[in-house]
Image 1 (tube, rainbow, N blue to C red):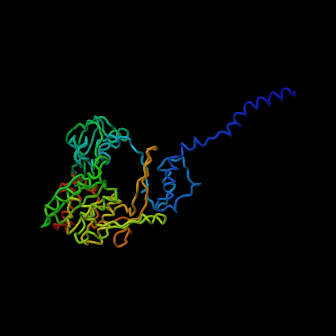
Image 2: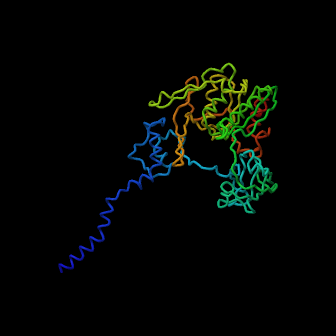
Image 3: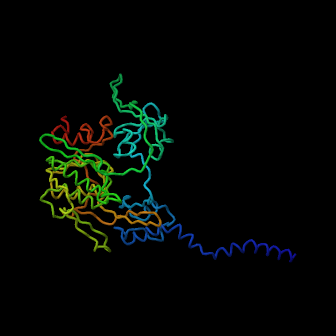
Length: 429
């Protein structure tokens, strides 16, 4: 009996001993590898984040989280998603060069039509002859569904598209309905690396004695890796075109502009500011209480013009949507103390009165875009966290008949802006 018990004890030890020994294994290298990215972000945020003192305590954070989840758990709600993390692509991802919005097709409850909202010049979409306001009805002979819709945006192969146009029909009950009808077919070339030039379109118009300069600007980016001032130089060239044309009203289309580099906003502000404001303060950037030595004043700086022109308009009209944010709102706020002739048409803006800085980790291939400073205008005003409300509230997607290419004088927001100048908008009751 005793020998049997001894045998059982020995068998138990053989089974349990490896488990006991494994408790002494150092698992730190394994844990470190899985938490290094979140800990890298946390270490930067504890020093540089504008609201570092309101961050969640380390012992309450999960450092195994995905970057977006980690940031959301670490920052206060007032951040509103302005702090983000992105992977660093070693090579730019291929793109078709368009964006779109899905609408359910009238004749089929499971099918959709894709309204093209934006086209990058020089992209496969542009090569295919697509325009903002076109409708994609079929892809490779199939209607668009939730299952195959990803090929429109995330695919890379060439696509055969059926393109439609929006029309309005009146039925027997005199009810007006909008439908998308087939117009033509085209082949969308394979996706490729596309340059995201923020200066999408510009033109000049004449209205009621005003010379109007119109520009679509989609993000505040100075240039490319090989040409750091490329897009800023395009802004300078446009300012020369407007100045030579005698432009006295500028329409800046920021409807899809979610912000970008503060330095670009300073340049655009200098090009748009009254000549009398040149050399005076445009903005104040205020960092957290640990980094007060980084506080700075930005001027309407003549030195930034560098071959461009101060347009010196008598009025500025901004066009916006609900995604207009960041540096776009900075421009509006910082020009207000210097001119009374600023108007906003479109939708209420986001309300981002803070600026971000980027931190790159080439080993982890991640980038942290961190809220670091509050942006004030020269009157020390920064109270637009609720966004800027438009003088004339217009949602471009409610008038699909006039959802047209940028620059078309019948396009909803541009038509309204030009109508304000010649007195045809708002229409008489």
